Amino acid sequence: MKRYMDIFLGLVLLGSFFTPWSKFFGLKGSGLELATSPQIQGGALFVIPAVSALFLISRLMSKGHLRGLQMLTGLLPLIGFIGGLVFIGQKTNSSPFDAFSNVKAFLDWGVYLALSSGLALFISAMFKPRGSRSV
Image (tube, rainbow, N blue to C red; front, side):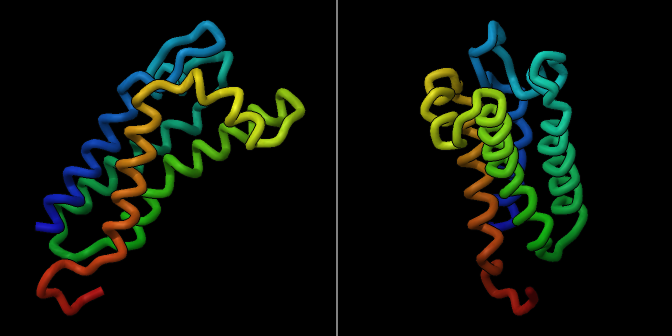
């Protein structure tokens, strides 16, 4: 059952990359549109769907629990979000906390979906499947 939950969360995280993330700088777009935008220079955002797809393929092909890959996959949206706040803070000469105060009004539901599904995937990695002795 846990395996199916992990696969579901991985699919939600992968799908969230294509949902609306922002509505700022004259752009209203998904993670894909932000990653390809020359103004944002967010090419590193492609790591999220790439690692999510790698996790899904690994989880579908393997019966084992891929804890490290699952934890990395779950943390990537948070790492990207914090990195984005640091980037915006540097551009505006403010702290990441001030950047979040300024940016939160421009975030769309896709960012929150990515963050919450990533967090759930990370937390799920902490638990062993029922009846399993392996790590």
